[in-house]
Image 1 (spheres, rainbow, N blue to C red):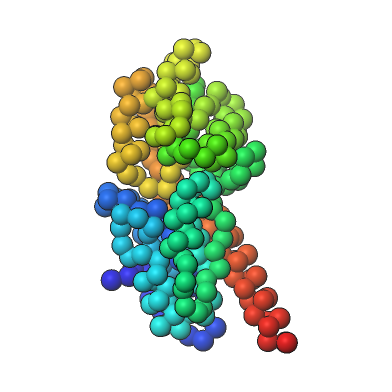
Image 2: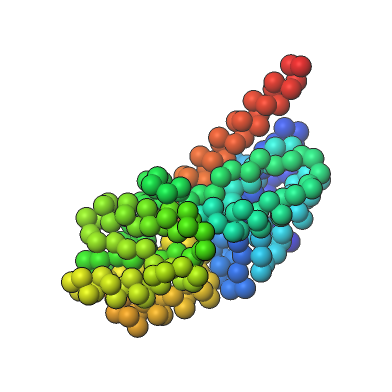
Length: 260
């Protein structure tokens, strides 16, 4: 059964929002994604659905088919991805290829390009650190990791932006594939003189990979690990901005077509 925070059935001309997450075998990750969808739905009077690229269901094709059957003629897909790495370049197009009408509008990933971190993501990371109610003098921004250099550079840029926001030393660390690992970044900050290093979880939802990174960071001396971004208000705001921008573009295109 597909969960919808708003239970109304879209009528003619209705818009719908699909949050397309990576997916995890961890049930808590799915719960976190549904909580985010619920928060988005509470802030926007439209139908909000969830689908996954891997490891969980429903998949995008199934949800989009259901939306079409129930009358949604404008669907916006917001990928819950933080970098333009493999999942954005390969998994996402594959999941959305060969779809029947209405073809959805797909927004850019929510993460930032190198050198241009979104201020709302910085604020959401800071919010989660504040939620820990712990003093700290160094931060590691822990991301999934990728062999894509641009993806890793965007995480490094986010760490720089968060460090500037906090006025503290801040390094990027990765859960897999790239270096330094989150644990290695913790050790680097400690060697540089930081006494209380915390880890900012740069992810949307919990999962096994991040738990392993969190455990390794704690063993390396981190005094705390923040919760994932989850349903942070700043994240909800960013998603809604992407939704409105894409919906308005689609509506404008449809209006132009009608005038031909």
